[in-house]
Length: 250
Ligand SMILES: [Zn+2]
Image (cartoon, rainbow, N blue to C red; front, side, top):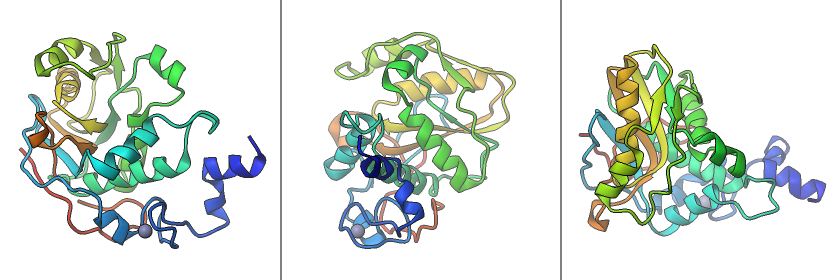
């Protein structure tokens, strides 16, 4: 990759130039999207059912339209970008932080991402949930432990499985380091049926966690036949609050 392109991909040019909004191209006070562009994204409005073992599921945005496009670009970067594309990453981190800003209750003792199996992490090069967890932890001034949870089995993708199949697929697939503190935020990129979050919550509770709040950048709207999630509200980087996104707890 050319040096300049590489700098852009890594986001280092932000150190020299004011960030540009990835939506309208205007200058912005933060990376990702400016406040007006953020407000145009589909928000999650209907109440969410938190999966078993999860006290509240928070996601500010509906996983469709531009939100789906941004999350896909974040999780599956085009080849040649050194494994990660800074722009969709900034947008995804912003969405996750907007969700976290709406989380009910006190600040967490620890922020923990849904882990990838080591084999998958090696082939992919990064854990999307891990990057989001780090951003959420920074924004909420809480510690982050990317290895508090481990994925024991390299489970097949949840895509294409129905609710029951998803639950079975991830049952017992996670283990937690112990002991863990009382209040944990569990971070994932997108909530669909909540089966993965439930399996993680079970492992966390087995390690002493009393309160699990799941924070996701986006969730599948209830009308799409999946569970979903959501509610959320403090802000990420120096972000003016973007109005709108739905709130829900369980
Ligand atoms: Zn904009």
